[in-house]
Length: 151
Image (cartoon, rainbow, N blue to C red; front, side, top):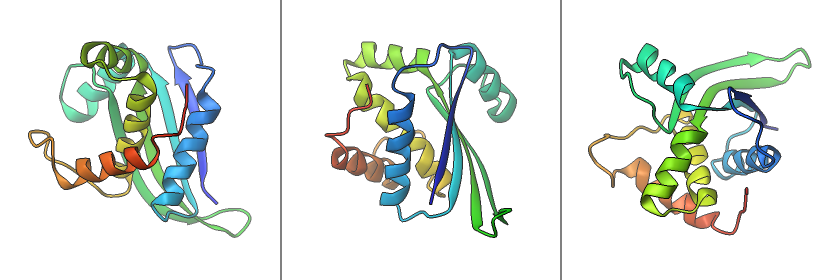
């Protein structure tokens, strides 16, 4: 069984947090992941900008960051667990992206959760190539989950 924790930093907890958690669990299942633990942190631009500057050397806000831990351990119950890592999503950047590009917030939020989980699963992409393998896979998964509503 997979475990997802969602928390907030510097923003009000959105009413859809439980649905986002359920969606992340569904994505992990679709990817064939079992025993995974990951966290999703919802924040504002200033917080994600600080992380982006500290860990990527880019002093700008961004929509999503992933921090892979990738460690197996045995829980106190004797279960083998995989500490996958953390996905950080800026709700401010999410809102701006949706307004600028005319994308529904529900769709973009799912895209960011998918994107973060794919990075934790070992996928990567060239930022200059919008149609790389990872991003194509992300969009195919997004279509598969088109009927899922988080908001």
